[in-house]
Image 1 (cartoon, rainbow, N blue to C red):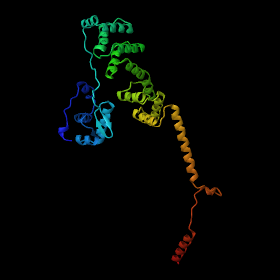
Image 2: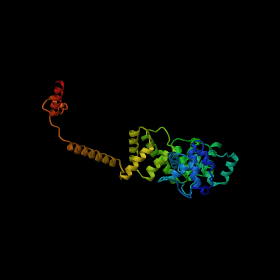
Image 3: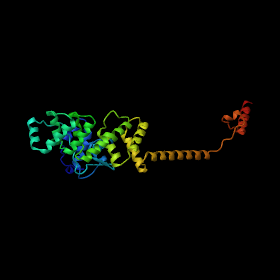
Image 4: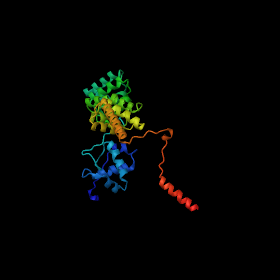
Length: 326
């Protein structure tokens, strides 16, 4: 590829802030190289490796990392950026709001007055300036709709989380995940509050929250593949039995194979296992029939392997030895 086919590259500050501190330089090299040629063409892994002077395996590992983050795609040995790609927003620090500013918004904006009244009702206390700043920021800074904020407040208070710090952390996660409708918020709560916890528990990881790549796997299983939760939990249990750890990629292989086989229930898995065991039994019985039957021994000495002697050759050897001695 000649240099004239490359284009200039721009990276947002939020994207840098999110990935620069902990992402290996070679991963950045792969991303920037691909960004400079896409969307003009797809870039083969081998060509990217040659241009960067890196092993193809290293380039592929970097590409798979970015794919898990939703930044690029790997398909048939080629890399490409999705069209209209926009990195997920990242919210680092809440803006500062003066008391007079909050009072002005509440006085002139019916929506903000309703928001403050709703928050006070859910939290069950008089709102301090810090409380009002957090609640206001959910609408003004994170741009969450008021009805979505209500779902958030209801969920947090039902879980006995009335700290504004906790509420803000959940709200930031929703905003960064693109949750801006009541439907999306309720779906998120269903997953994180129930199904995700059950999956993490099946992996023996109930003491921590899933990371982004793990959430991506779980969303794929439950939403894209539409695998029933009991089947997902069974795949997780089998993964731990086989690997001794929470190997999401291993569980994904199990579920992908089950999907290809048309398996949709735990009962289907049991039937498949029974069918496999029966087939193995039949194959073993068939192999045993093909072996020649063993002749029973006449006495206890027959249990030992019997030597076969060529007596004619033995006699010739003895005669030759005797002639030599004479």
